[in-house]
Image (cartoon, rainbow over all chains, first blue to last red; front, side):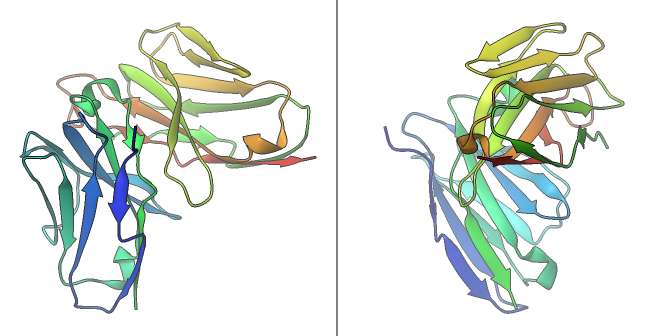
Length: 115
Length: 115
């Protein structure tokens, strides 16, 4: 059974640009959550999607957005990049609402560097 | 907002030693989980606890859900080199809280094992 797949694994952008990250959940998993991981702040919840609807949202500015497609694949977008957006962005999937059990399956992450 | 205080921040131990780490909060949680993250990977679920007072084992790992619902600990017995990684506690707030549905992570405990 294939795990959670995130693309790209690494990317470098400059301030002001925008970026789109992609996540393919485990087959059959309908919930996808996104987390930002930085050395200073740890793992911070961005948002969760279930059946193409955003079900929960963390405390991030509107520059951070996401969506989920009918096949449960998800994308997140960060516009007008800032240096502080440099981080590892982790996607996690779960069978139903992972938020209900906390049992998440994480991808390897997309490492974003903003110069 | 709700926060989890995880300690110790890092540990450097000899192979064969037992390890103990814990997580505390000023707020109650309905679920406690422990994840492990290895370099270049996303976190992997080790143990999930759903009931106050619950004690659960997974091989050499044992975790407990504190009776007050505000803390949890993880013990690793007879450590081996492959135990190296960052261990995160995570908590799921109860329904009705401001963070309902959002899995909150501790800052992590970095474990290094000397062969």
